[in-house]
Image (cartoon, rainbow, N blue to C red):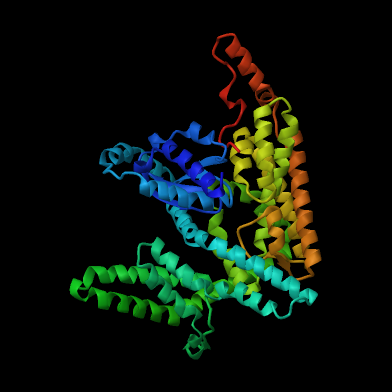
Length: 496
């Protein structure tokens, strides 16, 4: 079977289990998850879906998220969209009506203003991650070639490839922001483009000459949001006959002037403050800050809110060439891996769970934590906490070296674990930077393992989970009696 056939088969297997094409209102994907808008949540067959070999787990949020893993999700999503488009389309008003109450209840549960704001921020920046990763790796390769003195005729071309996207990232942020907030996307991009236009260097605001790129992604975000509100105001008050001429003109003019003579300066000051605070924090309280950041990041991943940090990472990359926060936050995944290995040893008779761990560990080493979170540590309870402890100590290790003057950063965002090695950069040599990051991973693995092995299981938890569920099930079936094995013996949030 070709890769295309395999991806289409995965999509075809998923579609009927989520209620069919009529139940799908939207399709999108992020780094690891297929995100579906559903008209009726009750039509989803969760257990059958989680039993598919290609499905690592499911997450319920504002959308129904199916964890397929990096690479796979980007290939399955187009096939899934094609199947939905090819299916006979019917008016599903009755289906929508039946699901309206459930959908409203779910939205009410999750739709706090803060969570909605964070999700919108994530929706703006998540589509940019593939370009950030690709350009970041090219930048790292270019730096290595320059340091080695190899291929001097090629390195300028690599520099152009790596820097071109970052030079215009404000435009993409403006485009996505306007789209997310309900405006015309291209107008958001047009207003954000003002920030990176070289001609702003001839303009003076607040007693200083503006610099191209001043305010960065934060300025672009604010400019595009303003453009959306101006555009919506125009749609209400401008006559329809003049709308096509007046609305885009006023949108760009008003929001553009405010951007030039206000937002660029304010956003520039905020961006500078973010960079200075990050440097100060790690230089003066690096060990403690790293401990807290590494320990608290795993719950953010669990909730899907970690993407809200992308604007901060991007701002640091714009200013310094790398983000010093990502390597610290990546330690949360190291603690998770260590905890999973301890669970594997503590439950020698639970064959099903051990297979889940063996299947999910390679992805865990590469920084993809969802399979281990939803398939292992979170259902067990205590191991999730001890995994956070491992991440805290790993983050503290890297933070300690920041206090000693060795900054470890990443030239892009997205990967973590071993996958972050090609993106590492810092204020010292590459070898020293790699050694510190590798040391943090080892500390995270070790502490996560030890904490879970010795404190991750109560006696009751061991008695419940350290059982041969498969043999027990076979015996009860052979005896002709229903199985009495607790359904929680093998955690089911994820199958890998």
